[in-house]
Length: 370
Image (tube, rainbow, N blue to C red; front, top):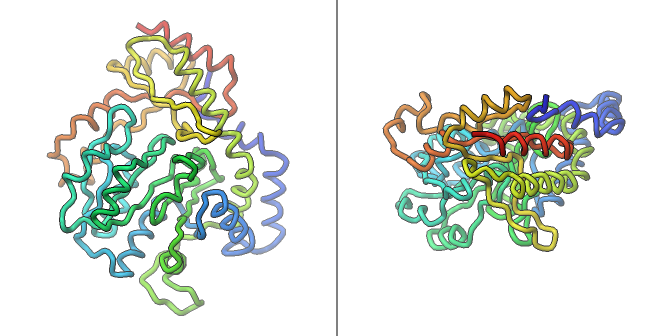
């Protein structure tokens, strides 16, 4: 059986350092808001290329708190609109509606699956206050047209970098391109902890201060609460785990890229639509392949065929956000490109620990699929 992702094997590959880092926290007797979180925040800010990193409980909270901070600053108000890709994991959109802001869905580019930058301007109104881009599947979504629109309309640019840690746009890493960025360290991510975890990165000093306070009950001084805050903090054990894994991230991302390149060069079935892959410039990878996503018109048949032959695959994602029951007010929307993607996509196994033998077997099976 070729697993979609063997998390135990990945974590085992960091031993004994991983267990030692956990023991270090256990022995310290300090489990919340201690030295491990401070250490990781500094390391991750340096890695991403921002002045600030604030650890939070998960990736959704990272995005929620960014928007909540902008509301506290008076930059956004209830009912304001945020441009967001229609083709994304629902958490991106939940962060907007949770703050009583209005998500304005924009169709993706069918070749990249990321937001189509040339379909954004027609959706901008006088109530638009920000653009939230998603570096979906691990691919940089930033485009000069988005930067032009942000400047032209004086909008905030927020990155959902949950799936793309380590991806680059020219010489800069995703997560440092906009005004603020949300990150997820869910166990299956390229940089994953052993539970839920997330972070916000930004170069905005005032925004960082408010975000840190909001995540800590709205307080930057114990028992003094300036904001209606949340309890959303990265804990010491998860921070220690992430500090252990971070130094190897670029190497692991390169392995993912090499596997993706092999898939793209050797899958020759004309029924399969492969993702775009760009040759790295100066070692800078713009797609870290958190997921390797193909399209097939008979996707369900292909998934069943691969499962019958011992290959586990997943669908990211089977139902688009605007067709979910929780967004019944959006169910009437017709977004044909998004809907086509959700009907056809299939994620193949992707991990830095996949062997060449396993990848060859997956390629062989797909090439024989009718």
